[in-house]
Length: 614
Image (cartoon, rainbow, N blue to C red; front, side, top):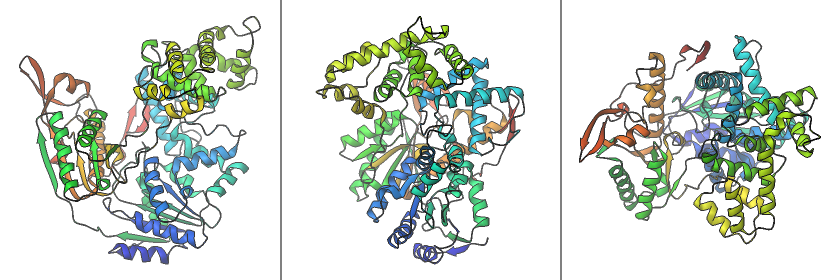
C-alpha cells in the first residue's frame, strides 16, 4: 500500500487520530527517530475514551522504559507488557491441562538441558548447531509444520529435545510465542488474552520488525480491533530476539489499511573518533566525554554508553561514579558463573537451584539442575532412565520422581534412582539446617551444601535476623531492569537499540569485538563471514541510532596479549616492551565503512547436513 508521507511529529499525531479505528495501521520511521510520544498520546487518548489498550514492547528493557513513560501519560502499568510477558500470561491462563507451564528455563538450566541432549551421542559442536537450527525453526514458525525435518537424525534429536522440555513442563524463551498461540485455542488461554486486551481493543507494537515471525503471528491473533505497528528499515534485533523477522514488517505494511512514513526529523550527527593507547585510557576518555557533556547541560538520562564487554561497563561506571555522574549498568539478566559438571565450579549455579527449591520444592526443573550439579555427565544417564520409567508407567517425569523420592531404598523398583540419593540428601540436610537459622547461620549452611554466594548475597544474608526462603529466592533470582531515566545508561552493544537520547558513546571499537572474530576468521566460510560482518554492521548502526545530536566512537590501539587472547580480539601483531608481551590491535572496520547498511539477505548453506539460514 502506498504510504502517506509525513513531515513532522504533529503530522504523525494527526494521522494516528484519523486512522485509530482502522484494523491495521503501520508507521515507518528512521531508526534514529523516536515516535514513542506520538504512540503514547494515541494510547492515552484511547484509554481515556474507555477503549482497552495494550502496548506490546519487543523486550523487557523496552517494556520497562515504556511503562515508566506510560504512567506519566496516565496509563496503567499493566497496559504495557513485553511480548514475552504477554505470551507467558496466555500460557499461564491455559492451566495445568496445557502441555507446558509458564516457566522459563534460565541460561544455567539451558546448559543442563544441553547436557541431557548429549545422551544422543552427537558431538557437542554438531549438537549446538542442530539446536540452533531447531530454535530458528521455532522462531520462524515452521516447527509445527509436518515434514519440516528431513533426516532421521534431526527427527530423533528434535523428539529428544521436546521430551526433555515436556518432562520439565518448562519452555525456552524462543518457544513462548508459538506455545502462546496454541494456548489461545484453549478456554483458559483465550480468557487470559481477553484480560490482556478486551474485544475492540487497541494494540500498539513499537519496533515490530525486531520480533520473530512466531511473535508477530501471536500478536496478530490476540484479537485486537486495531493494530498499530511501528518500525524502521534497519534490520536490527531487540535485546531478547535472536531471529528477528524484518520481512514481517514489510508484509504487514503491504496489507495495512493505512501506512505512514515519517520523514527523518533531524540531520545525521557527525561521528567523532577517539583513539586511546589502552583500555584503561579509553575508560577515562569515555568518562571525561560524558562528564563534559553533563557539565554543558546534557541530561544524564539522554546519554547512552554502548560497550563490548562487562569489564568495559564496570570500568566506565566506576569512573563516572568518581566524577559524581549518575549512571546505571543495564546488561540484562546475568547468568550464574560456573560449570554444572564440576563440583569446584558449580557453586553459584547450585545457589540458584537451591533458591528455587527452597521457595518451591515441587519445582521439578530446579530439581533437575540440582540432581546433576557436580557430576561430569550431570547424571543425564539416570535422568534419561527416569523419563523411560515414567513413560512405561504412564506418569509424568515429575510425578515419577516425587513418588520414588518418597519411598525407602528397599521399596524402590528403580536401580537408577541410587544416583539421585546423594543430591537429594544434600538438599534435605540444607533445608533442615536452614530451619530457624539466622542469616549468618544460613550463609554457613549454604556454604556447607556447596553453594557459593556473591558479596552482595552474603551481606544481605548477614542483615537477616531470621532466614526467609522467599526473600532469599527474590534476592538471588530477581534481576530488575534499572531505571535509566535520570542516569547515564551503560549497556552492551545489543541493548542500545530502542533508546533515544542526545549523546551516544560507542566504545571498544576494535576488530574482534565489532566485527566479531567469526567475521574475520579464515576458518569460516565466505557466506558465514559475510553474514557475520553484516550482522555486526547492523549492530553498530543500531547503536549509532540512539544518539540524535552527537555520536562518539572510541577504540584502543594496544593491550596485554593475555587480555587480547582471552577476549577474542583480532591481533595485528605482537611485540615485547619491558619484558611484557603486548598486542597491537586494529580499529573496527566499521569506523571507515561508508557503504549502504546491509539488509541481511538469506544465505542458504549446509550445517552438518541440515539446510539452515545463517
